[in-house]
Length: 203
Image (cartoon, one colour):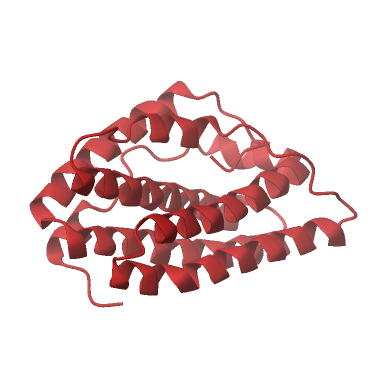
């Protein structure tokens, strides 16, 4: 992956940090968190596949996202293995209010470039928030094993969300990417404020 532009480095960053109490709630419902995490990784893989299928003519996008599919599915298997190790079942997929709220903000219709931009920025934002949540878990959980478990995921997600920004810059004017990303960050902060603080969700 090529070096990120200065503009890209300057515009990354969530506006609203996760409430520290979330980690304490998550620790009490770790089975639910692991289940939700597993489905998050699964959806990340399938979302990348969907983008590849839709934009198969964009060579760099296909080339860069193909290994992400493999990595995200590998993450799903890691979380699934952790559940099984604890004698737990995967459980049922839950409605993701956070992601659904982000999707509602995507451009509907209009120019194809804008639709591509919003799809990439949605993925970037989900990965950025996941990275932030994993960092919270890696630093706040009492179990040293689970701290290391989530440290691994945190480091991986950090690379993913910058990749989606870089891909957007590759195909779309950087000024447009920067301005729209700021709009997304503002919107995401309002979404976080509107959601109840729950420990059984990654988002």
